[in-house]
Image (cartoon, rainbow, N blue to C red):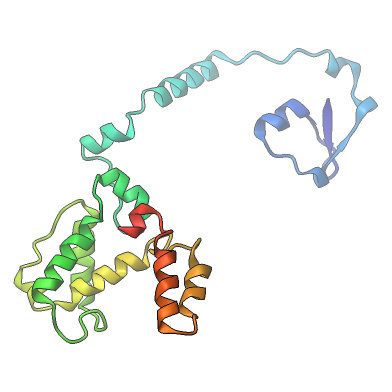
Length: 207
């Protein structure tokens, strides 16, 4: 079966177009009896030795690629912390809660009981420095003077982590239920509904 381009009167074998995986219906038209007999009886040319070697090389290359685990062991591949799905990150790291949140909350409970700890922003360069260290799978020393003197950068880092989650902590799937729960008429009813929706969170988000 052959197809003819309606724009350029160029003929292409359907098998080729299917292999490419792209032939918009509005750009082609069937040409049943217009194909010369000599073309229909022609045999496809064999792959040249040069191209055959290239294909063999590519197949060997693809099969010999190291696994994701081996790349991580060699330190070539780093798992993302910020902007990574929460469940995926915990699965890859083997933690119950993200290390970045654990380190930051422990620091804040010890040093950050100050007015506006989560309201005021820290110095941008300190926030980015902390982010880079956590993304590099390091646990920065938060007791350094640079962070003690800028406690708000640690609170800002926590907010940044939550803000960049692809699926928010309360999840897109439960958004409507949380919205209904906080709209309850009384405080008691609101508390019961919110508690009920929280129980429906996926385990990583619930923890």
